[in-house]
Amino acid sequence: MSSITIGVLLPSSTIAPMGKDFEKGLKKAIKENLKDEIAEIEIIPEFIGPGSKVKVEEAVNKLFGYHDVDIITGIVSNRIGMEVAEKFEKARRPFLMNNIGEHLPDPRNFNPWVFINSTHVWQQVWSLGYWAVKKFGKRGMFVGSVYDAGYSFTSMLKLGMEAADPESVMPFSVAPLKPQQTTADPTVVFQHIEEFKPDFILSVFCGDEASIFQKEYIKSPYHQKIPLLGLPFLLEPFVSEGEALELYSTIVAGEGLSQETLNLEELNSQKPFYSLGAETGLIISEALNNKGDKSLTEALRETKVYSDRGLLHIDPTAPGKDSKVYLVKHLHKGDKQNIEAELIEELRTVSITDPALAMSLDEPSSGWGNPYLGI
Image 1 (cartoon, rainbow, N blue to C red):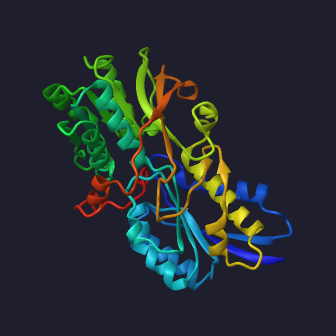
Image 2: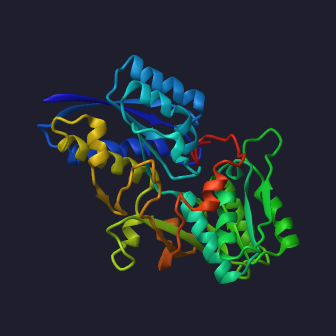
Image 3: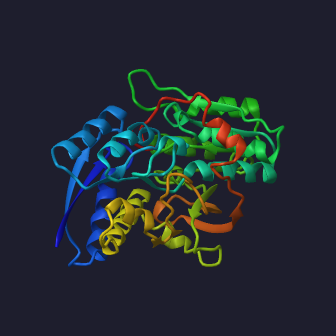
């Protein structure tokens, strides 16, 4: 029996137990799917704080230089993944990075030793923007905190809207940080909502900021007048005070799932980082089960794995390939354990090779590299 050592990069978060959830999912999936006679597994966690480049580089150097791991996985944003990809090429060992897709990945900056398992939120936001313009009108507003605005959400919403209508406009309002505090004040965006009077709003607040925004939104005159769009994380912390909140969001599925076979309850039953960890454990197990005389990197390239969201496409040269984005209408009556969700339709998606999207890869962007929720 061979021995395989897996290094795991685990970020911390004041919003969600993302690292803990990922590690739980990873270990459970390996235990359940790896054939007993194939390999003895050692898992070595390295904690990377909020997931900055400095922290990730330090952890990777330790995992390679001291622990001599065979593969590294964990939660790292596409931005940081691109900046450390060269380390894996030099070590000639695989990196199976995971994220929700808060940053647009640039295939030109990866190499054959890097793999991406992601829900590609950048693609989902594009789809929401495209659909919302077709459905509600060409004035779509982005609201979020200074942290959330540092990701690809604004650019992807704008590109999706412009694909639906070149004359669409995207006013935005970014909540600043409170003095001496680490959270923003979401209430300030409402004066700008009143000023711009958008046809719809995309909110990317999360954690306590999301809760404050939602309470204010329900109190405001815009509740039930201006459609609200958001990432699934917007719903997590909310506790209603008698009013139901309606929100449009998305989920992503791959080849092998259709609108008819999509199990919405199952896809929404787990925390996203637990699911990413479980998928990673399944991918690594299958690669080892079928590895034979091949290298682990070669085995990963040839591995085909189906999870609750269909075929997992981990090739970094075509992130988001074959993804299907579905619109979900949520009705939140105050109990986050019993959010009503209705699958509406499959939305148009965008490819990483789309000319407008490809052009955006070369445009200046924020230096914020942390994974979403890694604050």
